[in-house]
Image (cartoon, rainbow, N blue to C red; front, top):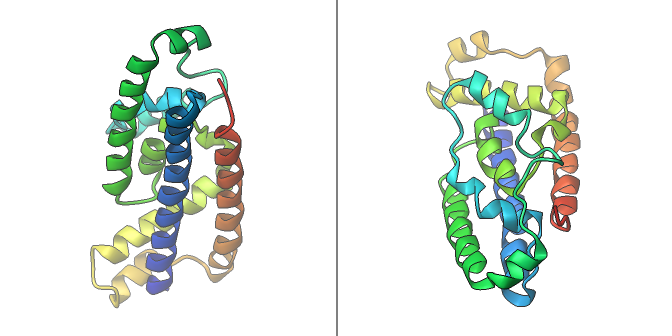
Length: 192
């Protein structure tokens, strides 16, 4: 079970990082090639500079707002066109910082999802409570396994998940990641 949890967590982290980076890359490329400055590009100018708060209560407050449809960076088409060079420079700085965040990422927990997904304008609430719960359970168990002997019966006893619940994890995670994928695809074409 420990090996399963470590491997599943690694795959969740990999998907989160790679899929989000694809969206960021596409936003940067769209601006460089055609001057297109959509929601993701606007967010990359600001949100990579905001760190996840250390306190879970503060993170929860930010998550109720960050990424929602009506929250974001506003810049009119005229302003962007008139200051294209400046916006391009800022986008490049934010994009480079974002890539560093992804490269230095060490997990799939909510704080890492915040750093990677909300920086693009993604609403984490759209993933649903079941996905959030499964990732949280996975992260807790993976942490216990990673910071002790993998074969430790104490870890298994203290963090044992019932077989019936464990059996739902793959489907719950797949469903949540499919929603994430669709949401990122949709986000990539949004203007605001």
